Image 1 (tube, rainbow, N blue to C red):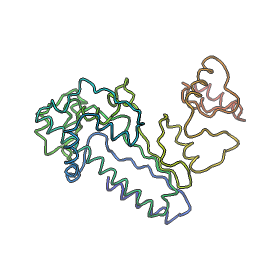
Image 2 (spheres, rainbow, N blue to C red):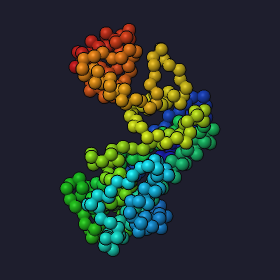
Image 3 (cartoon, rainbow, N blue to C red):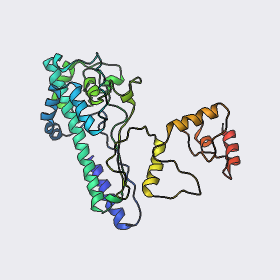
Image 4 (spheres, one colour):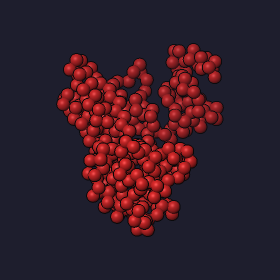
Length: 318
């Protein structure tokens, strides 16, 4: 990841030196904190004290208190811990030793990643473009992952092949965990704690928190929305309107642009109207994520000069 940061920073500075008036786009995608959890030993050791404290206070309530100040509303209630997850106080000495190390690796991985992203942001600042740059920061791909099982793993391929690693099996490789000879994952207890205030983790379809990803957006300096915490759902189709909003681009060809936060209930009503055979409401409709039709059909507008041609092409494609 350090090499990724170096190359991205060098590319950015080269582009702004060569064509200072042209915008830039960087898609920076590190592996953290997806499994396998890999990070240099010095980063693992740097988090040792904090992870030990986290283990000894491994009830989900301390995580709830911290998350409340960052992203959760004060009224958010803490979901009960699943019965399948052991309380920290009931763990054996070997389990505590292993699970503590797993969190040291995970936390070091996250801290290292944040540091590298900070270096990239510093590079943007050095070009004088930070207050003119839209930063969209997404951490993770849905809730925290419990695929490590109750003990975690030294080699995640045991999971893919239906195997189960015991605590004793993993402790044999204690000094290799997090390094290049491992392909590790943490225990499900950490995943449930990390998904606070929800009850379970990623891939648990019944759990609300396991199926969403938080996003942090840093607007350009000229945009007035700052320091807000928003709770509504967003979709990938909201990215382009958000960029247009931040760029201050006018409406193109008289078409109405949707705001960054789309009205999902309005889209659901539109979907139900179409299912019942009714036409769309007055005015152009550029998108409807709930409409179960191919993309080319969804983008056809009846009032567009080429609408009839596009509709015929879509009909033939179907």
